[in-house]
Structures are given as C-alpha cells and as structure tokens.
Length: 304
Image 1 (cartoon, rainbow, N blue to C red):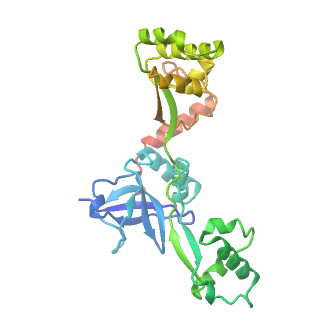
Image 2: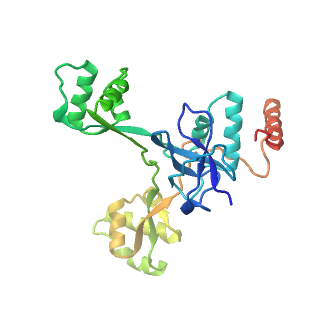
Image 3: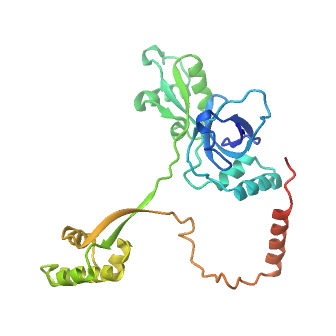
C-alpha cells in the first residue's frame, strides 16, 4: 500500500519537492492535486500533493498534518504543465504550482509575534527599531509578520524581532492562515403557488398603482420561469425591488432563498461566442504553436 506522498511546499524560495508520510486517518483520502498542510522546518506550510509513492527518498519522513479540502485543487494536467513550466523557465516548481491554484486558496506561512512579559523589558537603551516594535506590540497586541510589515516600510525589522525572541522579550509562533475562499451565494426567487393561484392574487398586490404594477410584473415573470431565478433578473424584467419580493413572499406567493453558485473565473472576460461544431481557423503561427503543444503532451515524461 502506498504510504507516502511527494509534495511541493508553498515556500517560494524552495525549488525541490519533499516526501511526507500519510497518517493512517488520511490513507485513501489523499491523491495527486490535493491541498494539504505539512511541517517544514519550524513552520507549518501548505503543499500540493504531486503523486503518491511507495518508497520515500529519505529515511525519516514527517507526517502530513491535515487535508484542507476533500476535492483536489489541481488536475493531473495542471501538475504536468507546472513541471514543464518549471523546467522551461528554470523556476521553482512551487512557484509554478502557485500559479495554478485558484485565488484565495494559496496561503503562505506567517509568524505571530507577541510580548512575553511587558514588565521585563527595559526600553531606556534600545535601538530605534526595537523601541518602535515594542511600542507597536504593546499597543496592538499580538501581530502577524505581514501586519507588522505595514508599519515598517523598507525597514528590516525581522532580525531585530528574532533577537528579541532569543532574549525572551518576544514570543514567536508559526501559523498558516486558512484559505480565504468562501462559497458564493445569491438570492433567488421562485413561484410557490400554481399559476392560477398567482393570477387570482394579482388584483390585491398593492395599494398604489405603481406598487401594484411592479408586483404584478414580478409575479408574471416568475410564472413564466418554473425554476429558481436570480432576483437581479426579476428586478431587471419587472422593475420591482427587494421589498416587493419580500411582500410577495410574506403572502406565500413566492419563495426567496439563498442559493450557492459556482464561481466563474471568466465572468469578467468579454464574452465571445465560439461554435463547438466549427472551430475557428488558426493563423500559421497559431497552427505551429498548437502542433508543438500536441507533440509535447504526446511525448512521455522521462524526468522520473
């Protein structure tokens, strides 16, 4: 049984890959492309599983700490492309892997600094950086390194911080911020009664002519749409507003929901219609590039 994983750690200065042991509770749950957390030196860092292996390249391996998502973050094709890019551009594989990860998933380790005992620090004879750092942590409490960076523009404060850690003035702890990606939800509306019941309720939907017209238009639009509809579509088609829809929901004529939707990475890209039956004609340069790509993917990978 495969008990080890080859992982690219999310440390930009590191170009190699590292082997880690799969703990028993993660056996069968981790595969190529999965995003995990692993120990790396004194840090806890993110990593992407490149492949599962039977024998590690080192005698002693550290265990994977956790699986961040049950679904793989990268496909086999993306991992292969990252390898080729790293070879071609002579770049760290981790940096190429990072380009493949969706925005918000990639997180690098940071360090939290905190004053251990404010009563033990003599600030009468210290450097300017020490004084500023001690004052900042006294006022703000524990801070991550990236938070401190904003207060020390173009100043190397980290050497001073490590000096204070060795003296016992500050404490430091490596942390890994969780991924910032969250599900995206939209409010939707759907007809909750039969079209006949909705039509029967039309005359009594508002006290003013404008309100009545908006709510009738919204209800008629939902009669024509049997499935959940994004409320922004209802607004655009009927001229109604959220208060109108909430009133229709109070009358139990429609149902308002919060629905999770898939994020489209190309939603801000100008739409271009391309027929799947008739692909566009390539220019000579595009055809040459396409043939090179096909040949590269059909050539066996002999790196390993």
